[in-house]
Image 1 (tube, one colour):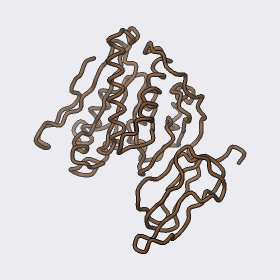
Image 2 (tube, helix red, strand yellow):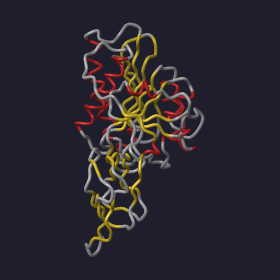
Image 3 (cartoon, rainbow, N blue to C red):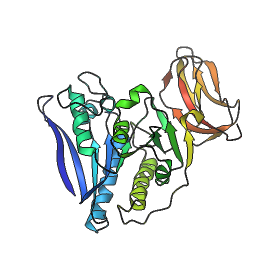
Image 4 (spheres, helix red, strand yellow):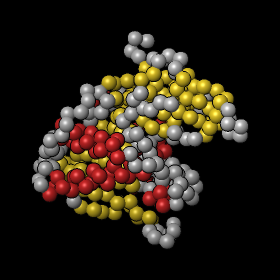
Length: 311
């Protein structure tokens, strides 16, 4: 293992702001793995720490295949994490909306440029990502429909689902999109949580990456075969919204089955405590995403449900 500084910036606060990378093996640029880009991505940082721990042991045992290099960047934004802000504290910008970056631009564009320069040219790019809304997912692999995506490769992670989505304009400035546009097979992995450590789904994420790297011939590692993934498009997910604002009480977890018109949550009046409205499932299916914030606004998405195939 070789630990190195990929980017350093002076003068932001008491210590230099640095982005560190961990290289394993040597030779062909095979896989780059990126963790936390936002200050609340505790789970994503934790997953990377556990992956680095395993890769260090595998390298010592000679289990990284000849002529293969793996780069792991556990955190791109420790500054925000230290001050408990999701985005860059100076100007509230999102590093993962600044790619491919600009070496002469604002700080977050410089950071994005440094990450992209360090990570481009790898055959496979894997990012532990978080959703723009607070909530929990069934662990899955997500890909953008750019014409370069490969669902068959995503299946090799052995997670339950592969989700393919059409990129929106804001997605064209993400690391995943920039990787794909520059010849890297890019995958985003989502787990059960973001701002707290979920040990079970973290282990599942680490295993999925080790499984993928083994199946691509980059590692020599014995691992459980995982799932045969169901490939779904994002438009296959039914969004369930609130009618009212107030305290949100959810009744279902990711992976739970639901039936049409089942009560799956409530909105509670924040002052008087009565039930303002019930949240009903619009379909038979399986909960894929469940909102976690205690307060919700009216017309806010609180669940995403995989519709039954017979629909």
